[in-house]
Figure 1 (tube, rainbow, N blue to C red):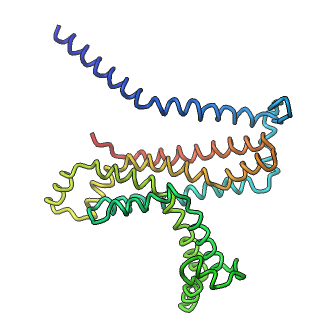
Figure 2: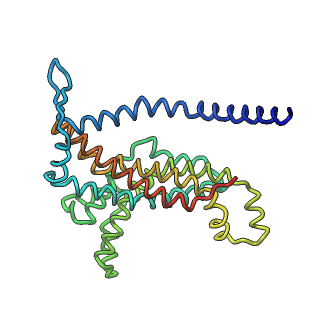
Figure 3: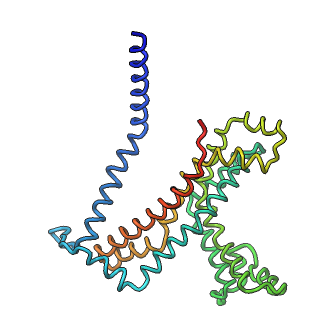
Length: 307
């Protein structure tokens, strides 16, 4: 009898945990069912049909099969190149954003005066648009690359806060190769985008760092572990599950602002070729899903789960 009671209690506990988990996931399940899956189905439907909008009738569909996919891959002049650039943007940007986010989270997790204010500064670009910052940096980088030679130096100085030409001239005086100068210019130009795209990831890493038991660091300090060893043996393994989460979020966020998405949007709203736009969206989404699956598969093999 005692064994039966224990089994019933154990089953009841598991059942309560299952119900709690379903209740926790219910907002996400409802949201993804109503606002995501339906749109995916509609996008797939539009990609296989000729779509026209007639006054008084509405949206009309005519089965077209793969007819929308052939032009965008064989006849469109830039779509294949933009898909490649989107994947390259993901491969290059995601490691930079993840590394920067983890680095800043470790710094912001330390105790210092004004820590809350500094954390708010790094999260502000997520809430507020960074168009002004982007325009200032693009103007500076355009002048460095010679593309905005008609911009007066006074206007450049007022817009950016510093005279960029002085820096580039100094690099030329030290006989820095033009390739290295170009690399530095592109790196500086992408800094504002890395910072803007790192706000949510920093918060996630902060939550992961604060969940690490302090006793682990105390034991490591007693054993004489260096800061380098503590990071690789404690910090990185403990936050590794959240690295996968941040990778998924960063890949999707990067793809949302990729050239492929802009081309599909222009095809829909400007050219009003609805079927081709849906075909572009479906093709690019499938490609990004494959890239995301490959990255997550490789990274998840090295994830440490603390029980």
